[in-house]
Length: 127
Image 1 (cartoon, rainbow, N blue to C red):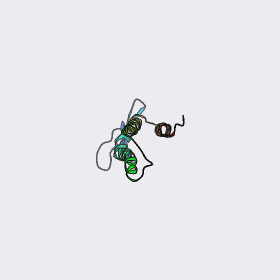
Image 2: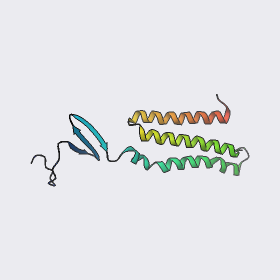
Image 3: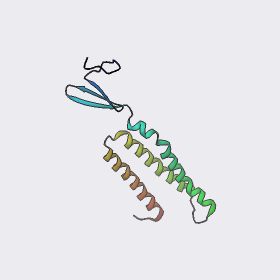
Image 4: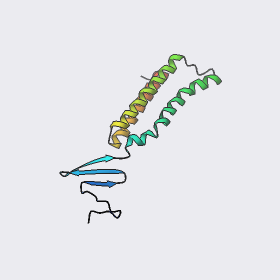
């Protein structure tokens, strides 16, 4: 009777729930399975990430309509799209496969900084 919830459902000593997470305990080891995983949480931000990259890709095209100082060719747009695609895929893979939040943050920042370095080198030749 001590293992009963007020609703009358029996709770196994090997299964506990806490804020959407299910903890399975067997043989002294704990395994946590998240019902609302970080991939599902990132799924809300995925369209925003790709929309940001698309918007950044449109900025030079719009600027070329108003000024002669911005002169991009088709190759420039292809190179920018390739950089954005690689960065976006790297961020998605990092979020999907890295469990530790600090490591995930460091890797995403590293990917963004590497992309900015490549972008700056392509723009003004810093390397």
